Length: 256
Image (cartoon, rainbow, N blue to C red; front, side):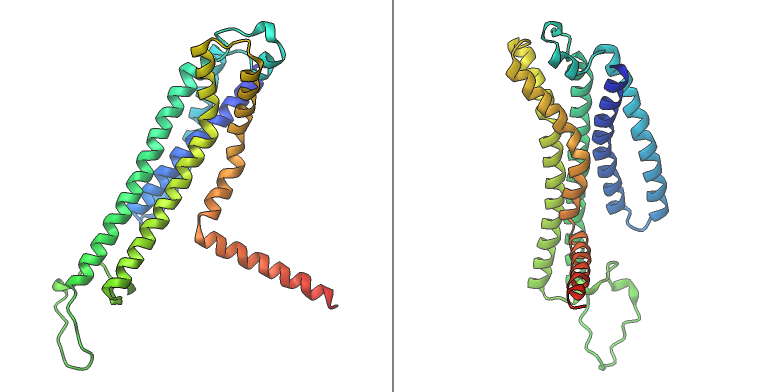
């Protein structure tokens, strides 16, 4: 039972910490887009730290809850008020802190993207208009903006449209991350709190819901990459090309 509870708690803690580490890595990448070597070192450090902290959390969980929820589900007479002490006193504060960090990092990402788009539009408005072939001297680079790109050749309407599209894509990805975090990790501790508050220790329906939500908290490891991928346009385009390629190969076999 101890090993089962240890692996179960460590996997859930690792998933929650992965949310935080991915949020921090994305925030660092957006704020420092050209420091790729530092991002690579940071990613390695975050992966190692996630599993060390997850193992520590699992050890603390074993000290407060030596039996798994499956054991108590099959043994009604062994249920007590201390069954979910580890969830209430360790996992719930830990998960709440991680959620606050995830919301903070992705909120900062949205704020940085909005600030960057605003700076690009301001720089584009200040750019001097140079007619080709009129001999105008543009050698004085101090008056040119520090942000260059093809967005600067767009008119005001298209620049605003591009700005809204970038901000909408960033906000949509952040929304998917936060919603998936809440949908998969919040139901189980919420049901535990309801059981503790209303003294429903021997209610079988409550325990069945807890068991279902407990398993659902493990599904996020498989569904979150799919959610992130579907929210990423580059992934969708690449996946569509792969499917189209195999579809053409399949159709070509029909005519052989």
